[in-house]
Image: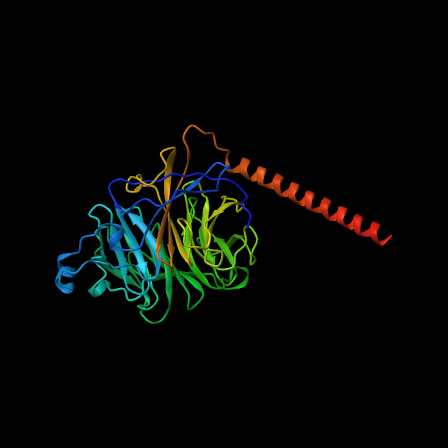
Length: 385
């Protein structure tokens, strides 16, 4: 997939991970202006120099803590803590202030999570975790304590949940629909995504844009579907294919504050970035084992509030705007941390200018390709004569 534009980034940290900084990798690569920098990867306790809890020391007899993530999917950041849905374990937390790695406090007893897939966190710190094996969406408060659970266990298959205003929107994989729960009462107030042009295929991941539209990563349609909150389709992004702006296995999605849409494609091992009007800006990531590479990526999350924890990894010439987290389900780099930003003192073109440049480049490439084809055809005809 060719890069259609340029983007820049910077990120670092000082009060958190103690892991040695990895190689400096920018997207797009030189000579274009970089917009995204790969910072560091996190996989387990050793990456933080994490100390074990008293309970864990009792259980393990004081042995070295080598716990790692096994198969992460959902990820979210809040107040110095990185929450990761380990689908083969439970909900794990990297506490970047305390430098610990442990099971989330509330994910036991009533809040137990046998197979958490996705997590979202609202501005007040409330957490919503979709667990298809438990068959419920489990809510926790800002202190990570159990609050309530949504939906009848065993009768559906929730795979993502996002709160918006007074409701919780949940992707139900079993019934191929979005269930809308009243946040306070837990009752289903609406079902969307069924029937006619608004029919969903395999809804797996959800995100709201800054204007309040619901976006759904639909693995059955190979598209990102834009809906209003009444369930009417207002547009789609992408289609099945291997070209720029197309999808083979779309998964996690997220928005930044400017309305750019980030889409993970686990088949391409990258994340594509689209403008608020659906045009592809660029992508980052490749298959492989080097810094910044991806291995069956699943989820992407954006965070503006915890940049200081990763500032130490940023190139000093760059200033960070926000962090980008991407989970990998295989390999030794489970959570990749990137930064979006720009090089200090350099003017960067707007998204509109980048798109215009990309379109002109594509026209030029097409023209050159056509000219080459005409020349080859003429040479062939002359030889036949």
